[in-house]
Every structure is written in C-alpha cells, then in structure tokens.
Amino acid sequence: MDLTSEVQRFGRWWWSGEIENPGPLPNLTMTIVIPAYNEATYLLATLESCVNQTRMPDEIIVVDDCSDKDNTGEVARAFAETEARVKVKVLRTPANKGSKAAAQNYALSFITTDVYATIDADTTLAHDALEKALPYFNDPKVGAVCGCIVPRNRKSFYELGRYFEYLYSFNIIKPAQDRIGAMFVASGCFSIFRTHLVREVGISSETIAEDLHLSWLIQQLGYKIKLARHALCYPVDPNNYQEYQKQVFRWNCGFLQNIKVRDGNLFGEHWKRAILLAGGLFIAFLLLLEQGPLFRKEFGHYQGHFIYILACVAWIWASFRILKQWRLAFVTWIYFTLSVLGPVFELAAYFLIVSSMMGEFSVTSFLVAVAISFVLKIFITWIPVIASAYWMSRRTGQRGDVWLAVKGIVPFSLLHYLNTWIFAKAVWKELIRGQSLNKWDKGHAEIAALQPIATDGS
Image (cartoon, rainbow, N blue to C red; front, side, top):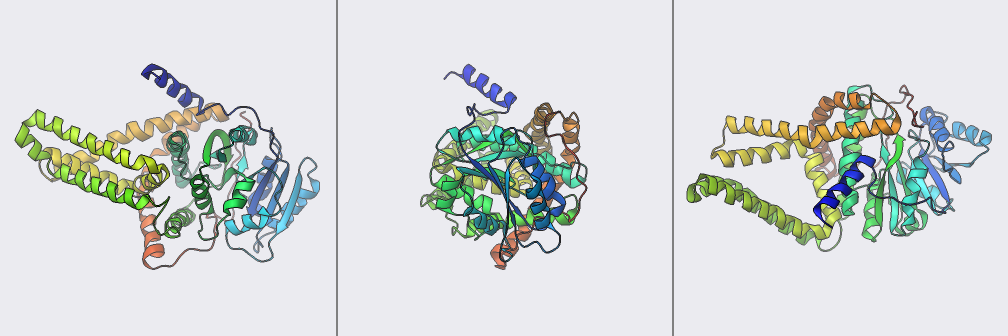
C-alpha cells in the first residue's frame, strides 16, 4: 500500500470515527447485566436506557448486592413488573459480595445468551449503543467490544477534567491501541463479552479492577478487544475532590493488584527478557543524553547534532523492535509511564534533553523544557482533543461539546498532577505496606443532580 492511500485511509478513519466497517448486526442473543449496590438514585434511568434501544437486548439481569442504604432492589423489581418489552430478572446475592467481580460471577450462571453486556448501575446508554457495538462480533476472534464513554454531567471542575480525559482516551489513545491489536482495558461501565469465553477464563475476584483482569486474560488467549467509538454511554462521574480521589485511588489500586497477581510477569515468559532489554536501552539513552555535548565537541556543532539525533532515533527503533512482540505489555507500561507518571516523567525527559543540547543543567534549560512541554501539549493533546469534541458534537447533537472541551483543558492539566500523587498513595498502600483495597466502592456522591443528555442524536 502506497503512502497516499494510507494517508487517505487514516483520514477517513479519523473523520468517521470508525476504524473499520464491522458489518451487519450478527444473529446473536444478548443479555445485559447490571451489578448494583446502593444505586437507587441512578438505576431507573439506566434500565430505561437499556429498553429503549434500536437493537433490543433479549434479557436484563440486575444483581442487587445486598444494598443496605437504599431501596435498589425494590426499584429494580418495580421496573421488572411493569416492563413488557424485555424480560427483566432481579437477583439478590445471599450476602454482600463486596466487589463488582463477585456480583458478576453470581449472575454468570443465569446467563443463557451468546454475549452479555456489563453496564454500571449509574450509566445510561445512547439509544443505538448496542446496535453500534454488536457488529464487531461478526469476527469470531473478537472476544469483547468496548463502548465509548462520555460523562453525563459536565459542570464541575472534576467533571470537565474527566470529560477532556475521556475525549483524549477514547478518541486518540484507545483507537491507537485498537489499531495495534492491544486494548489496555474493556471499560467496566459498558462493554460486551462472549459468554462462553468469560466462563472459560472466569471473572477473577483477586483484584478490585475485574475489567482490567478480564481484558488481559481475553487477549492472552488470542482474542481481540475492539473499540466501538460510536457506541456511547453516559456514566455519572465524581463532582468533588473526595469522590474523585476515591475513584482514581481505586483504579490505581486495581492496576497494581493486576501486576501483583502476575508477580510482575504480565503477559508470558518473554516479558522479563523484554523489560530487561528495554531497560538497558533506556539506560543507554540516558547515557546518550549526557554525551550530547561530546558529540558537538568531537564532530562539530551541526554534524554533532545530526549524529546525536540519529543515535536517539536508533534507540527508539531498537526499543520498538524488542517490544513489538509483546504489544499488550508495552501498552500497559506506556499507560504506567505516560498516564500515571506522565507529568513528572515528561518534564524530566525534556529537561535532560534540553540540558544535553545546551551542555549544562541550569534554570534556563529547565524553563526551556517547560516551554517545550507546553507547546507539545498544544499540538499533541489539546488540538486533537478539541477536534474530537467537534466529532462528538456531530454525533450527539450537543453544540456545546467543543466549548466544554476547551473549558476542560485547565482541569485536565491540573488533575494530571493530582493523579500522580494519588498513584503514589496507591503504591504506598498496595506495594509497600501491603494493605490491598478489597472493598468495591463506586466513588461518586450518594446523591448527585442528573443532567439530562441527548442520547438519540437530537
């Protein structure tokens, strides 16, 4: 394939929001599973969105995990009694399972359909979400399909920052993971799985992040996870510091627990060899940075810069050659370094590069590194995300999406640093003190105003 056709193909993919045409709706039966624990405030809206689909589910199962603070079970049963279009089954666990994974495991034996969707009790679906996601199962090697997340409320500082983060993740990062065949996670708030495959690998209760654990297992077996960018869902995200840090802390603990249960050996026996080789190359790269002034001294100013840049390109190429055979592991550690440690790691790398080019470590080189970081963020993050918001506004009919994305730039940038601090707390608890988080907590306020959002494109 020549360069022109590849550029055109990429342009069509970016503009349409689809990586490929998944084909027609498959002839598959489907169940929706909704684990719920004290979710009476949100559950009714979630159920109504599930039965107002252009492709209706065959059954809905609500798992009430012994809710003790509200009438979640009563809300579900009242809905089941009046709903005539879809069979709604309400289960109550014998005792509180304490985790979303355990609640799903409890429901698994009641599922009789080909595929099932897991949806958080505070998450509503766009009217065509199932219709947009199911066609990916035409490929027998697709084990799961991940929907696209848009925060239902986008008013507070934390909600705007999360909106910007989701735009970046589901329109830039996850499509890239999709294209290389290594999806970091099929998001727990809305994803669809092949039932027989989940029964084969099981839904582990070893970690608090069952969606991450299941996603890795599915891909280890050779199945793919696809991203359905047009299959939209709308969860309720935290709107204050307390709930935000609680949710992010849970996510980080879940990530670290998934590393621990594999003893650091993420995806097979070759990973340790890969990380050693990549680590050696990284050390070589750092040494290369230190020797930048030497290149200019030995070869002259311009020739030295040219040879130095070639050496850096050779390091990047060698790293890719080593790690490309372990794509999912590579994506995982990219998440770790960029998403979790990103702000510190990024600025330190720029500082090393600039100091090497200038021949000294100084305040000036640090300020230049900050300026480079700012300019790159404009072109690498901010502009693509605002363009993604424009695409989203075309999809949802919400004209204010672009302005909301612009308003989310500052919250996202500041929350990035907060996320690094929260991750450090998770490392202290999980890895150093050995105090694993084992109680599943959704992480949003008990009562939050629900902001209506169009799910029918109008």
